[in-house]
Length: 226
Image (tube, rainbow, N blue to C red; front, side, top):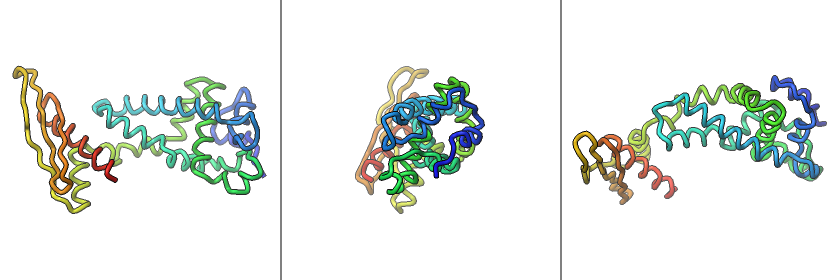
């Protein structure tokens, strides 16, 4: 038996002015035409923005690529599904008989989508500040833990640890070019991984930045290889 949406609202510590918005957020497309797909679209957008804003403020030294990886970790399906399970969100879902019988209320994709829809409903009902407060409560643990995660390590460290785990020779870095005046130099550095028969280049206003950029590109290439 589906639990009452009011119970979920109490768990969320949010009081809906329009309870129908929450009802719609908890309605799977298999249950009718007034379902949560549009709210999911809205919730996905606001979640991405608020998490990006939080990371921007929390990690002022992080570069764009690092911030993007952190955001992707926080808003990925598995993270959302874990939070949804903590809310027992599947118990509140309205689904068609076939979807219910097949166990759709337990699927990561369904739970993640529903959580986004609930956030979209809160945004429409209470505005951005109410939505931000709810996200900060729901994501408090992953947000606090993110500073100890692998994604915050610099690219050279991550590349070294990756190669060590594969028992491969460590990368070599070579300065290929230095240009510009002494106070505005531009470095081009090559990163080479002999075992993978791959080399990448990076640029930066210091040798260190160029090495980091080259290591980042090498990691991307190795990821693409699987």
